[in-house]
Length: 606
Image (cartoon, rainbow, N blue to C red; front, side, top):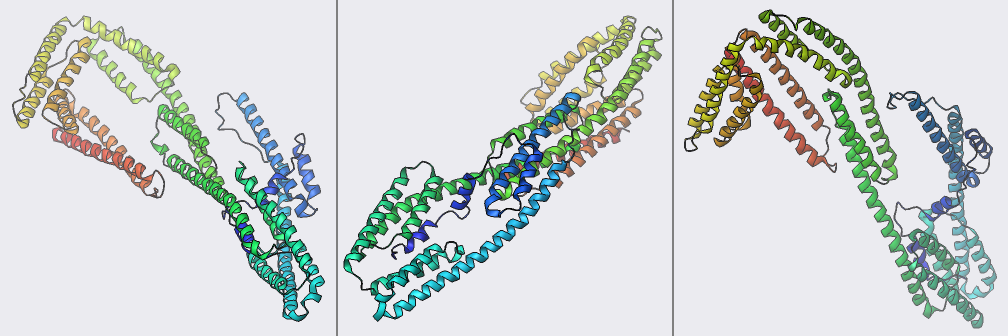
């Protein structure tokens, strides 16, 4: 027998998170078979081939498990090949490693595509069966309603009614969107039949008591689930209890509401815990998705075109590795986005390391050429170090030093060695030259004393004068400094440092901003250059350097502007990233303005 007080029970049991796994899905996961770990890839694919023609519902979990076992073996195989490659190519960091397609995998994919089609057909057929079951259940309800319409002869239909109830229970799956509607209609119809049925009171009371005992036991089982730590296990058990409740007949009318309320309240506790569990899972997935998206945007924003040195690439590589480690700290994102984000992040990393490998290869070739060029300069310098033609040789060595600066870097392995060789030859000549210039030494000592006097004058500028007057005095002392010739070589760095510290102190005292100080210092340097021999060539070279610096800053500024267009404020870290980029863009603009003013100063002296 069945009662109507379960009308809301089935509906309540279905109140779970919309994205949660259904009990059937969970049971499928638990019943999944684990294939023999000793099977080869070919054996695994052969097993799938043997299973593919069997009924879909009996083999789908086994095939999925075999597929996973194959990809575990494939992953281990690829890792072994990669280790072997690295062992044979220790100079390579793995960027050159590639894997040939696996013919077994192609066969596996063909079989899985066939099975996928079979599974789709199976599901389509299953839906047809559910629709047919729905129509059969409606027909049974309509048949019971005919009994109710003949209320005067209700007793004679009792046996047929019981058979119809049994038939109704034996029909299982129907479309999910029609479950509640059918169940409520059925329960209402059954209740109507029982209310009209004039049967033996003892039989009726016996059924009610038996059903009451069963429902009390179901209530106790549902209440005990509140202490179950495994939320998913408790929810699955609750679904089974609800199925048993629906299959249990009615109790006495005066007890129906109380017993149902008790069962419903126990169910609500489990349903609430289940809902909270999946809401918590969703929130964690959302946070993980936002964190992974931010890392993708961060690595995609890297401008590899600005990385011109090994140090710059190595520094950026550390950042990439740090981001990869940070990626590992995030859990799964939503099913829809998790794989997409992983592919996006992996592609960005692969692109960076590919570009790094290309840069290193090109740079190594260039450094080899630079090494040969610098060794040739070493030989020239060494051939001139013992010369006593002081003026001509000094000019030649100075030209060689300038040429040295135009040659790019060499490998760290040879950098110090070749530099020491070159500078030793140059220093030896100039030391010999200096020993033959005692009168010049005396002049340099006098120049040192004059420069110390200027530093003293700078420190004595009073704080009481106004900013404009103070700046004029500073400029006058700068001009005086520039007129003074060389000082002893060993003292030049020390005295220049003291001079710069005195300037910085005075500029700070009169609130001169950093760019203005740099411009004033540059102005004095330009005036000094203009007074030297071959000044026009020097000024032109300085102007060319500034033009190149201006173009670099301009290109970098444009890159930032382009990157700004790719940012979306919906990203978690977009606000802070935009502010940082705006700060860098402002700094670049100020640098360009300063360079433009420097170029104008040179133009005035040409």
